[in-house]
Amino acid sequence: MIQLQNIEKIYRTDTVETVALNNINLSVEKGEFMSIMGPSGCGKSTLLNIIGLLDIPSKGSIYLDGKTLNGLSDKQLAQFRNQVLGFIFQSFHLINDLPVLDNVELPLLYRNVSGSERRKLASQALEKVGLSNRMNHYPNQLSGGQKQRVAIARAIVGQPQIILADEPTGNLDSNMGNEIMNILTTLNQQDKATIVMVTHDENMAKRTHRLVRLFDGSQVS
Image 1 (cartoon, rainbow, N blue to C red):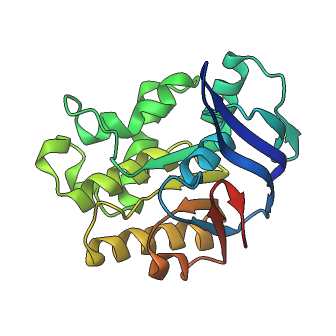
Image 2: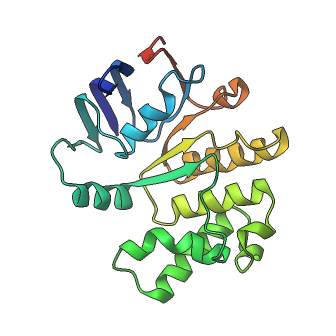
């Protein structure tokens, strides 16, 4: 489902060159739940952004669902992200001025989906994460765990094949974190979603199929 070949990411200024990722070769099978760990600044989020087509590698090739994505225009990349990928962020990235249901609908605005169908799909996604009774609330009326569940509903509303989660439990206590992991595990087992999760939590990583460790931009296991 995901294949990275010889990926490098280098940030350059006039005086400094910083290697964020160095010679990453990684394959993720369809239906796999993989976690990425490593110390702060080791390149975990950079790697996730490259998998999610939010950043472009300095060198190397990316294949998602068997398709090479080198050379696609920004518009083509955006269309592919919208159709194939779902993103879950540590800081939720919800729009406070919109009700929960409208937040979840957002990815569908970029598809040819009617208003009634958008609301139906958003309602179903909220039901999956146990928040059907909160769809008319606003984000500032929710707890941190509820906000993260809304973010998951938004990520899955378009039925993506791949879910990318950047520290989805990082801002939550252990109980809420376990609830979020239970939801992700269900999405993986029942919906067969391929999930790549960045985490600092060893206990959460142990609940996934496989753990990849990074150190100073290189894959060490």
